Image (cartoon, rainbow, N blue to C red; front, side, top):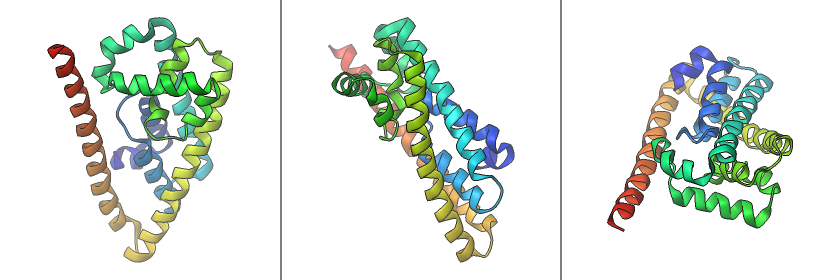
Length: 201
């Protein structure tokens, strides 16, 4: 992922955030924080990275919203496991949406886990596409901006300690790989456990 973002910059941020927002198991914390570190190294612009992240999230969110709107929960339950989405994830997002209404899209965008799946129940509930888009943009801008800021701060520190971003990049690359691997393994185990329970029932 480090090489992809380093080589393709804003395009990579857009593509990865689109996937993350469309329920693909790619942690936004890693994507945007690393982009922030590249901003600190003057390899990306803060505004450009933020725009790429928010627009990518918006596109992915609309994909998930459309799946919920047109296919409903049955479609998500049938194919969700292919993107490591469990029924409990959907239950959690639906409860969050039903308890807080449409504003949950705005608030949910700054909460780990919930933010990834909140678009599906919004689609199932037939939330207005305009209001959905506005709330998604606002929430995504807050979340992505925060992560960029964290990555920027850490990138600056690494640069001063290692006397060069390249050395820090190897450290960050290792952390990125470990974070993604751990995240995917955790999601895969959850999906497998749920599938086993369904078969046993």
